[in-house]
Image (tube, rainbow, N blue to C red; front, top):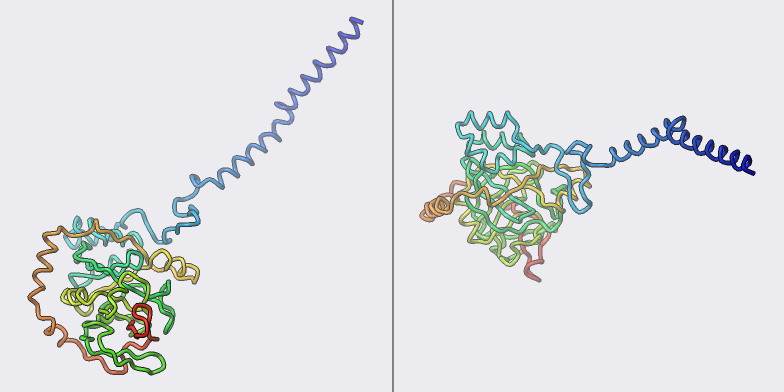
Length: 324
């Protein structure tokens, strides 16, 4: 009996030793392979091991544009220094622009104009900056009802990109003509002034006033950018033909652009780039004495056949055609 019990104990002990050996001996290579596979999978799926610019964004956000950097390129900084105003440029929006588009930044620095405009479709603002990228003044605006950059005639989109001011016109008596050749008899739909933008694909887009001030802040136009009549009269005193104008997309515009294969330059505008209040007051006060008529007389008269031709917009005032 004792001998049988002893034999059984020896057998059980042997099985235990073999089991331990299988966990740490011959089977160790297979176990290690499994661990490596797990580690590899985790490393691939974890964002901490990926390059910063390739991390997948959550579904409700958009990735930064491919060009976007987390620093101002050295060649742009060198250009700031060459101009002798490194600190001024670095504290303005041009330094921010350089992170998304160094070419935009270089064009602004090399511009012969002392100011430029940014139309921000996300913030719904028309912003006037000084040459260093410090905000002088901003205005609430309305723009196209459809999202994304303009692709064709009558698509109800505001074009995005780097443009310039083609001219400034007295639009007080302009009449709106739709695509079917019907002309409204109502004057004032473009407000008192029209800043036409020089855009390669169209001559129909501009920044202008409106007879529908309640539309400001909305996506309601067929492509143009609307300001209140008071604001357009102030803005034209600060704008000159040839001045740079950048139109940037909002979030939903970017979604549409990316779906359509268009990667339009985008950057962040912010009131943190604004000039001091006292300096702003001085600039705006200095233009109050200007004669607006003396500026519009210097511009080219607009031929009748070049007046904006888009379908009538009845969004803001039902039964009355509204201009672009």
